Structure formats: C-alpha cells, structure tokens
Image (tube, rainbow, N blue to C red; front, top):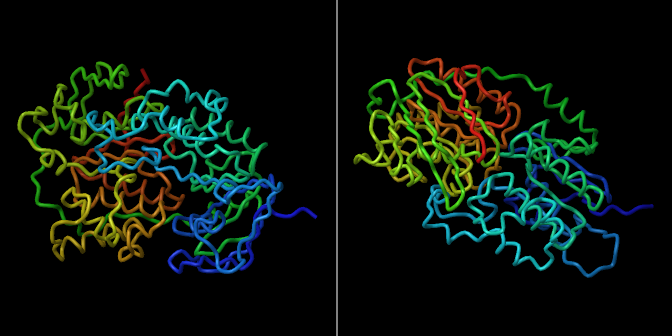
Length: 474
C-alpha cells in the first residue's frame, strides 16, 4: 500500500499561538494535488504551517515519508511560497520606497537573486522569461514577473511538495493563464498544495481539496463541493455607519481633483507612462485597468504624493499644481488609500482598531491620541465591514486576508473626498468581497465622493463606476 508523503494524525502545533481550534487529521499522497479553501481567518495559513513544518507539531503528529532515500532536509523536500504582492520577499523600510530611484541599490537585481541559487534551473528561467529581466531590480518587477521569479527560487533543488498561498493575487488575466499553465506542467513533477480565497483561483487540474473554517480542517472533498459551500453562504446587507465622524479637514475646492497634463515617467531605459493626460472631477467613479506592468500603481503613486517624479511632472491635485509648496500631508488628508505596497510594508504590532485609527491622520502606526468619538467611528466602520471581532486582536497575528480587510477599513475611516483603492479585494473571501463592494457603492452614493479603483477582475467593480481609464504596457 502506498505511503502518504505527509500524514497528520491529531496534529497540534507546538507553539500555542499557532494552534488550530481542533487537532488536524490529513494525508497527502504523491501526485494528490490539493486546494485549501475557506473563509478569511479560518486557519488555512496555520494548517499550511503545520503541514510544512514551519510550525513544528507536538510529538509525532506530523510524519513524512519520501519516495527516495536522498539526503535532503525538510525545507528542501517541501517548499512554500507566500506572495507579498510587490517586493518578492525583499521587504522595504517604507511603502513609498518602490518609487524612489535613489533607494534602488537596496534591492537586488533579478540576476543577483538567481546567482545566489545553488540549484538554479536555467531552463526554467528561460521558460518563465526571467533571463530577459536579469538587470532589473526586483522592486521594479510587475506582480506577474515576481511570481515567476519566486517560482524559480522555490523550485531550486527539485522539491517533492510545493505549497503556494494565493498564487494569482495581483495578476492580470493573461498572467493568470500563464501561471496556470506553468503550475499544470509542474504538477507532473511534484505535488502541489494551493491555498485559495476565490473560486476562480482554483486551478482546473486540481480535483479535490479541504475546507478550513473556525480552526477545523475538514475531510477531502471535490473542488466543486468546496465552492458550493461558499455559494451557500448568505449575502450580508451592507450599510454605512450611521454616525461617521469626519476628520477636521477642509474639503478640497473646485471641481477637478486630479489633472495630468502629458505626463511621462521613466526608470532608466524603461518608460512606464508615456505622454498621459487624465482628468478626474469631483463625484466621478473611475475604473483603472491594464495588464501587469502597464503603470497603474505608478500612476496612483503620483496622485498620492508617494512618487518623487511627481515634482517634475505637470500634475494638479485638488486645485494645486504639484510642487508649489504643498506638503505630502496636504494631499493625503483628502485621500483614503489602500494598495499592495501598503500591505507589504505595514507591519505594526498594534490592535486592529488602532491600525484603522491610523488612517485618520495618514500614519503608518498610531502616533496621536484618538478621541472617544474617533475611536467610536473606527468601531462603526469595522462593524460595517464585518470586522468587529478583530478590533482587539494584534494586527500581526491576523491572517493575511484579515490584515487586508483592516487596511481597507482604514481607507474609509476619515470619510475622505477621494478613495483610491488599488486591488482592494486581494486575498478577501467571497463574503468580504461582496460586502465591501456594496459598501463602496453606498459610499459613492453620497454627494461629491470620488473613486479610483484598480482590479484585474471586472466582476469586482462596484456598480457606481462611470468612467474607465485603460493603460497599455510600453
């Protein structure tokens, strides 16, 4: 009888902070590709950590049986990838760092990363198109390019099992198709475990998986049964807080909020935006689309005053020409913002409600005393998004989906004139996505509220969208 590669019997993490609510029972056989599915905070990441040995188990709760006798360590047998969206594991000191050319030396190039890999697969690098990016710093790679780089890194040494957490986050349709093709090819060489948060992101060639919710890992069932469980969840009505507190900021004057006049942005020999003109007026609701690397996040970094190239461009924000003496805070006070960069770099050990409250004054961390009225408003916004149960929990101990939800709430909390939502539904489960989409529509039904939203999934766009800007890659 075939031995499972991984057998978990009454599996309990040794560290009490990383335990699931119930002991885990699970077997993974060679070639038995598996999807791990379920709501945010259900325990998917904790289960993967137990399976891979990232969180060791008590006693013999997790046992491994490999098909050969090669002398490999566990981390060579099982490779795990948890994509951080933007930087490929090279975490910067601050989220604006991606746009600062003078900081570029702090990030290795693709070639330098690959040169450090003792088992680098030159053929795989070519297949994934990474050899053509050898001289590019990793912070200038698109999300799709980063996925390919991290796959090459993870596959060095030919692991038996590859565990991937939300591999399709941030990828455009073509990149998702490419990644699925690569994963399907890899499925003939190793065993895949994919953690997913949306039905569309379950690779078609994976026939079964487990549902993880409330700290309980269920039995293996067909993938269509997993998605049916999610479809059966009731849709929660979403309403704005009854008495939201508006921060003491003057509303921007005039009808035009954003004005770009023939804007060009280059990094070295690479042109990101070329002669772009764009105008956003008060009360408009824009969808910003384009393939990976087309310049969407760069454009938004100019609006949010995070990119120093804005000073050299003819940009008007909230009625003021950029670089005429206004501070970064004069601009940010009118904007509610969430992005992959922010998620990658916001690593504060604070209660979740304090993370939300940091949005009142646009800080990364909470450095001002919050009034009772402001804290009550934060609690109301968390309730509106279905996140009240997270208020007192440490942000760093939340699941990645829960962290993303908290940062989304943070964008709304000061009742901003302009919402800039860059892939706001990354990693959110179906219930949270639909609730947030309805809240965006409710917020935009108010007079003079303006929206710019980026997504690679057209079905995520709120009904209030009435304008569209599509960027093309140069």
